[in-house]
Image (cartoon, rainbow over all chains, first blue to last red; front, side, top):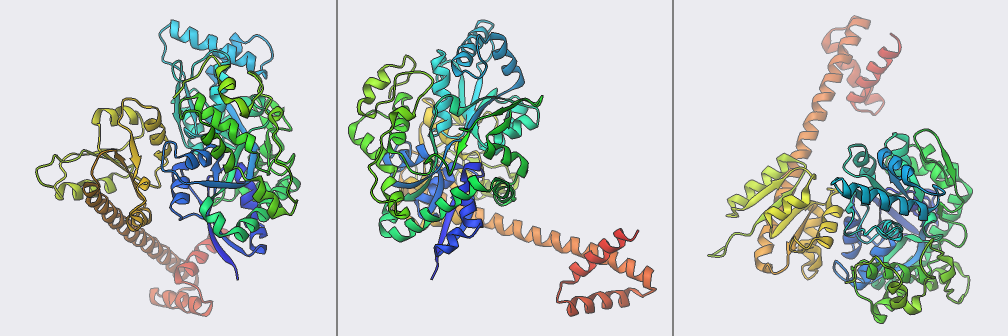
Length: 386
Length: 196
């Protein structure tokens, strides 16, 4: 007997493991009859997951944490037994902002320290001549994009709440908004940066792996109460997603074709292929840049949820005034990421939960220490405490 | 609604027809302060100046995420919360989601005042969906009619048939091949394009 499941997703390449798991039949082989529902907003994905219209969802990792803590919305405890993607975002800027940053840059254009300082000079110059503040778009208040942009610009001394405007746009609208001058820059997942470059309206300034070596991006999210009632379904879903993730790495051509379907991401397979390969055209003039860390799906243990990642995201919520610091909340946040469920499903036995603060290697700031969040956060000059 | 002041309602909708249907329904029910915002440009400043008690927005509208961001960061706007926050009334939440409507409600507005507004929105959203459906069906039927007429003309010319004979030929072919007559007509058009 098969179990019917409704699973929501947003058209992004980091939904690949989930989409492939369904479209290649891995989920069916686990006895799961999955209906993938393409959504237009994270608010919809979250709400439909909350009220049970979705059994599971492709979800921004910080939304899973915010839901479990009841920040900004209703409190619904979420469990994330599978990490759908590590990294995968990029910062894209308009041709004029790109030129302004390149005029000011001292050092390597791929060095986020150099670009952050250059951005600070651009921002200061604009203020002196009375120009409008720059507008940066990201995908949701509780998103890695929001935190990555903020982390980067704050290192250069730009206060994201005072010196620039931060706005939210749905990923498929990013390139248009850049083209029409409504925003000057954005941080979004694949393939939407590449779409902007191909249209000649943007330059990819950074892969987010320049800012943090390893950042949990999207998770496969289920309601915690539901996961407790349906442990076998959760395990089957994790196994199907794990096969999907492995397939993504081994069969990029076929993955890109599957994702390009109109009811999935619905953009050209070749563009998707570039993002899977981490070989991106970063400027309209054809300049290419390659990185082995652009988007990790089924390699380097990317799929196994790492609670330290959840702690880092929680720390960002606190740094930017979305919540205050508490030991209980930290424990709850870390408890959203469930390596135990992942290990149980894949029969890898009870591995000790590895805390790997070193894996963060942010390009600036002290090493991340979940045991001392207050001390960690105090080391940053720019912040907005709750 | 008694002596209480009518709550201020903002409708964010790119469809002017649906917004009008909704607006009309709300006005008929005695809600006098209803404003429609069609464009997503400068949404925050519009909302700020209107200072609504309730914001109605379709679930298919991608601006929901932008709205939530505004509520998060804005000190100016009273912070509205999504109606899904109140999970005590599962049936009405289900009805809203089925109809594709969501609402943000400023804290403090009494539940018994919200419910009739939401119910009205749900029924008007459904009415609009039915209308849209009918329109789509009519459009499709009209287009099919056109295709059939053109295919008839081609058959009449190529095979020297009368209009009646051409139609009978298409209909019998459709029955034999278990297809719709519109599909047969379309393949005749395609074939004649290819053979030009």
